[in-house]
Image (cartoon, rainbow, N blue to C red; front, side, top):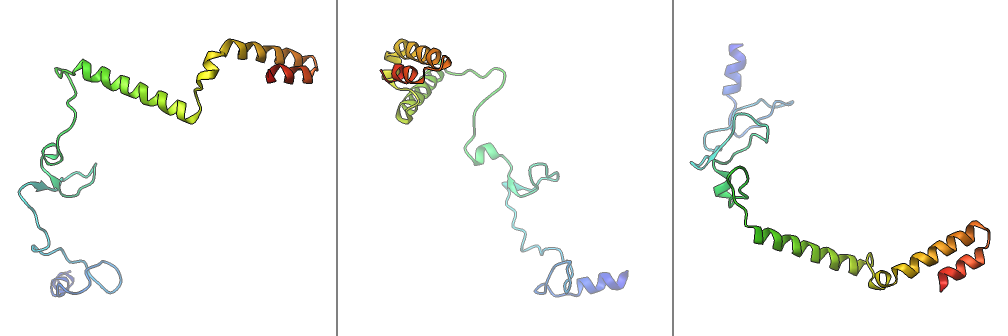
Length: 134
């Protein structure tokens, strides 16, 4: 085992550093690992063991404050809800999901659908179609 360890350490750093055929694993040199004071590499990699800032909130601009004791501005929350409702209304109108004329004549349309349904159940298809075409 000592000959294997000595042969690994005798491999120059510019050679292939893999555990595959034709190479042997060599640890990275100290020059390759550039660590700053602000970054660290976690020991447990549940979210990935890669170098990251120590304080992610400060490095990437913070985030929402949630939890007990955090006060939210109700007027901003209500404004956001109103904006979302307006955007959804505009989208539905643009895509043809909601049509104002359908809302205006909803009772007439429902009556025509009911009449056409009764006519088609009785086998009078032409009467059902004419009820819907009015």
